[in-house]
Length: 458
Ligand code: BES
Ligand code: ZN
Image 1 (cartoon, rainbow, N blue to C red):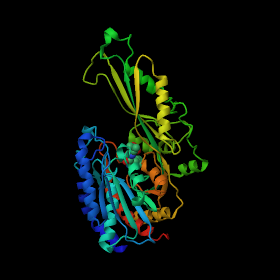
Image 2 (cartoon, rainbow, N blue to C red):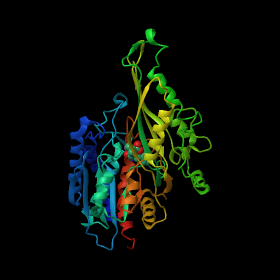
Image 3 (cartoon, rainbow, N blue to C red):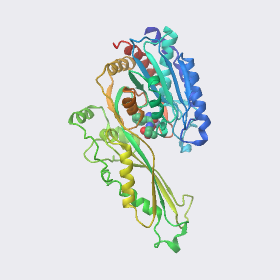
Image 4 (spheres, rainbow, N blue to C red):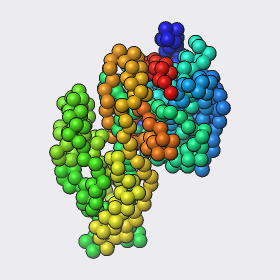
């Protein structure tokens, strides 16, 4: 490992320059205008997998964006096979005016690299590529068998991935999956994530009169779709943060006393958390701590809302239409399809007859809990200890990576979630960035991890 460690150290600036090329590609999966850029990004991943020495590299077409695969299976049958999963697509960049530098012109400031996708997830995918390359260059081989699966639709719910996995079970067969698409608990606090939430994402469209109306002539006599929508949204949750949809909590597994004790042990600084967000008070479901609310309890949030006049000044209308995008984070055991139905039924039930309401489901995914008592987890603890000089903590996170559940069910493989982002690196928001010291220590940790995994007896 000595040679590999010093190789990684002496190449750190080069890695950053190479990462910039990856970050320059605007692979926004939800935006039809970026379709060709997303493809270009898949090509970039393909050429990178080739450059680091993988074999059987192939771009698999899907009805949406392509999936990139590559492997290296010469470590021997007595060595574990590890599937590394990540995504090369990114979230939209709006509001663009809040970026200090343009989102696809990577810039280094204060030891961070700023660009859309730097933390989520291109920078973290790159960590894996570079640690593999470090093994290849120095040893001409890898200590374990490796399969790489990098998709382009994670940010839009991995809509074609389950299908791909179920038709390619043999290709993807592995002992464990490793994913770096989450965050460390804090700077200098490496962590292994063992729980992710699921998601049900809905759209509600409300239509009133067949055209915008003069609010003086019609106001008071015709229901206003924005007002009606606001009433509907207000009835979804009470003012203490409890969700009011009938049956919503039926399948939620209560947190055990032991889990709650573990949450209390985490070094969470609530004052710093509030200060970082410039809010005076936190808000959430009664009876739960902030960490529990943000990772182990279900939620309901409006992501966007529209309708009526949005320009400068005042325009007196009663609009014809209004709409909202509403997502619910789910905890393991809650089924997205069931929640979608409960949501739709509830909204239809409370909607006034004076407007038409259309509810659609945009996408969803299941949550996951992964076991923390396995040789692959012990190896991860050791690798992070060597990479960061600290023993990692076990955490649950509130975000979703729906394929982790699919890996459990279709490949019968547990996923090890080793995140190298930080909670305040602005994933999905303007000025997304990745700490370069974590990028560097991530490469080192994964290089150690491959080595530690090779010690596991099959
Ligand atoms: N990297 C995130 C998932 C994540 C976020 C894990 C925070 C842990 C903490 C991932 O790229 C993501 O954003 N996923 C989407 C999934 C959704 C579209 C189904 C999410 O969570 O919104
Ligand atoms: Zn994301």
